[in-house]
Image (cartoon, rainbow, N blue to C red; front, side):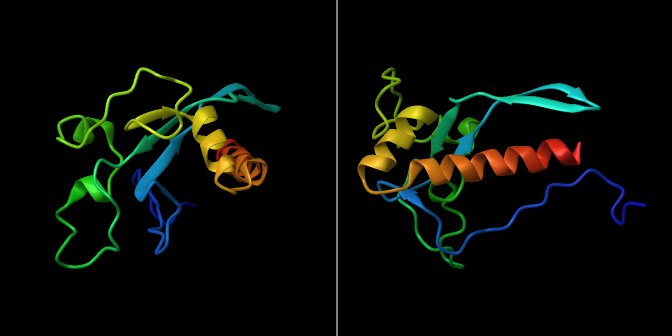
Length: 132
């Protein structure tokens, strides 16, 4: 029995998110579910990194209206003056939408453990598929 029967979105706001050049970002990953029983799914090695238009500021009562520093939503961001279009899929340092592979290379070049990060992404995708 589900305690909350309506469709819902559950998320946690991280107090100190990882940033890309001072900007908040999220990752869009693509998973193809081949079968639920038995569970078989494929996680694509590339996807998107979506980057906020404005530099990140810790949330405070006075800045929550500045959606471009807190939300990575493309439909909001593309209307922002800070939106940066990029046609270079290999550039993990510029653009409001970047390839996931290029973003991981960019982060690794700056000392991040891209292998561990990919492992975390994979674990989240596996957990999501198991919940189906």
